[in-house]
Length: 230
Length: 226
Image 1: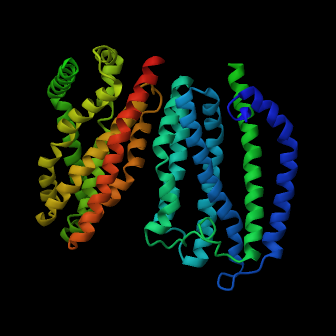
Image 2 (image 1 turned 90 degrees about the vertical axis):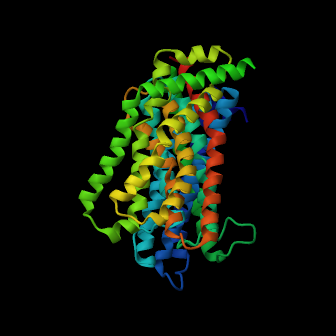
Image 3 (image 1 turned 45 degrees about the horizontal axis):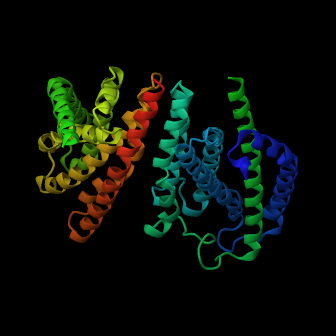
């Protein structure tokens, strides 16, 4: 597992898995799209709009997961003085921001026909919007300090402080009465979603996660090379 | 005993600095009053409307005037190297940050207790709510001070983008605004008030725990790379 904290090992490992990952993500994305559009049933209330879920939910999971990874790497980087974790932080922050934006946009596209409004100020939506703004502030703060040693460490502190938002996002649907539905898959009892819809959702989640990992590998490698040039 | 003496010394020094920069403090409160007057002109003098949204206006402007005072936290001491000298007297950066937060709260937040009734007068609001606003402000001001300390220490070496400090304060004080303003809207039910106060207290203790560590770490990083 050394490749997770060592840049040279990471480059070696990523060269090994990069092409298989691209093939796998393409295959999964293809199967997932076929499943999502043709092989899954319409919802008995929502009709065909339920298919937005196959983008919306994985994007949300990836957005939160990216922030979680950044938090873990910030703690590791500050505690054990491992510079590679800051490289990863600055490489994957834009990915998280983009997936949060995808989640918000698809959510409002789904909300208009179902709830009758593009946006409501309910706890889940607000906390995800704050997550998006946090991503933007992290990226801005990193770019506005010229000394790179300072900027990456201070950004790591900001990420750790900002990670209080993650449990709020996760539990907002349980703590408050929200228009957004409570969790139906990531809970302790069995998922309250029909298998015919769960299957494409899982495939799309794997596909989008692989896609995010592929983009992440490209960005991390570029970041490593950029620092080597300096 | 010697560490207590140095804590007291730093505290007195900070107080003296704030006392001498009296007009800067005064200008922040002038900003507060002026913003409220501008708000009245922008919305129009409508008593019923202000009774509904007045507390929200006051909280928003308190937050905005706090973004003006970020530079007062560490920037001057950082630029003239006083922070290193204070640190050499045996105080850790976390303690320094804590003392600074205390003095900033005393000199920049506590005067709001005198100005809040004036704001109530200007907005023609009912004075029944003042007690609850005082209570929520007592807790909320501590939280805002903690967040300002974090934001101020993060931007010590930031010479390019001055507005990012204000952004950091604003994004972390969203929960304070939500619960601080909400207290007044439910003011007839004592149980809900208690719940909101408890949530605010929880946020306050969280930030009291985290902000000396975060600002101390940021000061240390900035000093190492100055």
